[in-house]
Structure formats: structure tokens, C-alpha cells
Amino acid sequence: MAQCATEKGIDFCGECAEYPCAELKIFQAQMPHRIEIWQSQERIKEVGFEKWYMEMIEHYSCPECHTINSAYDMSCWKCGKTPSCNYVKLHKDKIAQHLAKINA
Figure 1: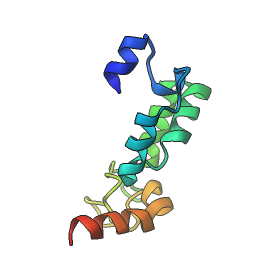
Figure 2 (figure 1 turned 120 degrees about the vertical axis):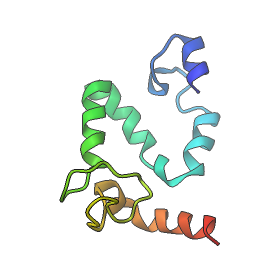
Figure 3 (figure 1 turned 45 degrees about the vertical axis):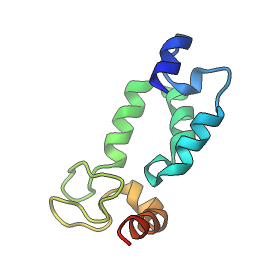
Figure 4 (figure 1 turned 60 degrees about the horizontal axis):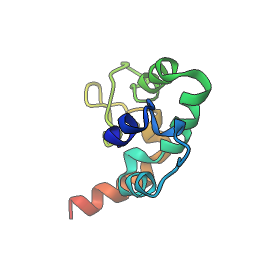
């Protein structure tokens, strides 16, 4: 997708006239950490990449120790707080289903 954006002279998919394309829809559906891709694209349009990025740091940070966690860390890897971040709090069921599949 980065190559596609470069070829079209855009910075992110949400700027594209073909958004959301079939490739992006397939990409989004494959992994739980991509659940919020549509909201993210809209938020980038609204506030710009830099502000959105700062919001994402907060979204993935532990509410207890402020460590940035993965979308797949059910508990904070540093302090053990559950859920590890707001993203996991919002999407824990889909993340757990995905982890169960890959660990089976």
C-alpha cells in the first residue's frame, strides 16, 4: 500500500479517490490490530497525522504505567495491568479469538 500511495502522490489511503479499495478492505479484515483502520483514516483527515499519532500513543499506552503495548498484549508487559491499553479494552474479544486461533 505504501508503494500505491507513493505512485498516486498521496500520504495515506484516506486521501485516495478509490478509498477504500479492495486491497485495503482485505488488509483490514486479516488481523485484529487493524480493526480501527477506517476510524484512523477519518481521524487523520480531521486532525492531521501528527495529532492522530499522539492520540494513538495514548490509545496503546497502559493506563497505569504509560508503557506502550501491542494490540495483542492483553496485560501490560511492564506492570501487568489488565487490560494493557484502551485498544485492548475495546477489542479484547476479537483479539482473544485471533490469539486462540494462532496458538491452537
